[in-house]
Structures are given as structure tokens and as C-alpha cells.
Image (cartoon, rainbow, N blue to C red; front, top):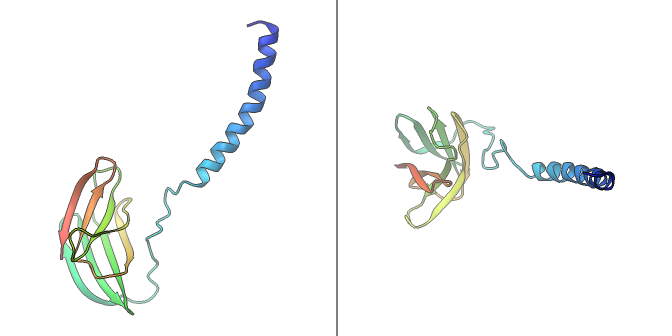
Length: 135
């Protein structure tokens, strides 16, 4: 590398480096790693429990509270899939309601607009069904 090339290379990196930092900061602002948009804070006591189902890994309650349905999912043990999306099954088995993402062991609450007949846990990356429970 001669002097002219070194000088040009230095000025290029003085321009490129701040631009890359700004782009990385702007891109990382749009990522939502731990914000559950479907998760609700349960402020009042639980409503009337309509349906319940449970197995060794998951426990599901469908509650009705003031003309709204609330699906409470308790994940008891970790799921091996890296990404897991919870889908609500309606009377029409063709219609699926995407409720939200399960990130780890814990209790999740999702507001549902209509009564559901079961849940389906999917891995969208591998396009596989992990778990299916019907009430």
C-alpha cells in the first residue's frame, strides 16, 4: 500500500465507520427481544374459567372476563425449539389465531377476541408443530 492509497483508505474508513454505527443503532431499535405485545397484565382477579387443559409441559386456562376472553398459559418446563409461537384454534380448524411467542418457563396471558377450541404450539423456523392441545 503506497501513501496515496493509505490516505484514501483512511478517509474512507473515517466516513464509513460513523455511518455503520448509526445504522446499527437504528436497526437495533426496531428489534423486540423481550417485549411481549400479546402479554397482558392481569389487574383484577381471574374471571370465570370456561375451559382448561393440562399435560406435563403446559397448563392452559380459557377465562371469560367482562365480554372478553383471556387465555392463560403456564409453561412448566422449557421447550427444545428455539422459537415457539402460540396459535389459537377456532371452531373452524382452518382458521388459526396467532396469539404470541413463548420465550421460556413462566405464565403468559393473551387476550382473545373469540372463544377458541384448542392451542397449537409451532416452530416457525423449522415449520414444525411442537404441541397441540384441544379443550
